[in-house]
Amino acid sequence: MKKYDKYDVETIARMIDGKLPWPELRLILSEEKDSDRFEKVMEILQKRVPWKEKILLPLHEHLYIVSKEGKRIVKCDCGYEFGDYRENWKTKCRIRVRDTNESLDEIYPPYMHSDPQWEEIREYYCPGCLTLLDTELASPGYPPVFNFLPDIDTFYEEWLGRSAPDRKGA
Ligand SMILES: [Zn+2]
Image 1: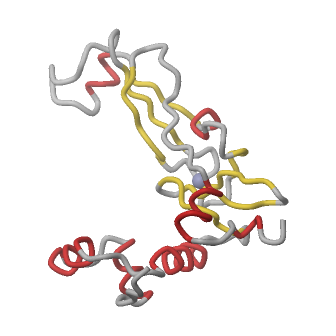
Image 2: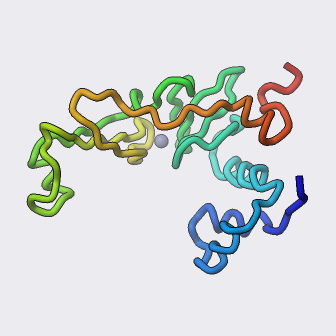
Image 3: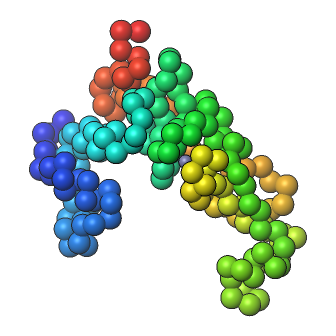
């Protein structure tokens, strides 16, 4: 692999926060990634969370897969734990369903939303900090959409060339 290590932690942190001006960001996006980009991003994220469990993978805005007592769980940056990462974290959320014309009228201009008998909007809030984590549109009765189930070990072994941090010595 070509060694390509151009951007420092401060620049990457500004990129994560959306604070890089477009011309600079466009350059970074179109270039080959730094070989240690993942490590830098993980270092930044780990320093920002108030808890000590090791982050294995960022999962979603505010959510991380972490290693805790030999288990891989989903954890919010507020500290709320959603449990096993192989289960849909949305099922542990506080959920608001917009399935009436009145509730859809709150967020759409008049006559611009779909028929709530055909499509509803679900808002998923963290039970710990009440941050809106995700929204989805689905037909009434359709199960909560499972966004992402990463293969953590394959990612570490085949993309990073090493074992996941919680597999060391295993
Ligand atoms: Zn939270």
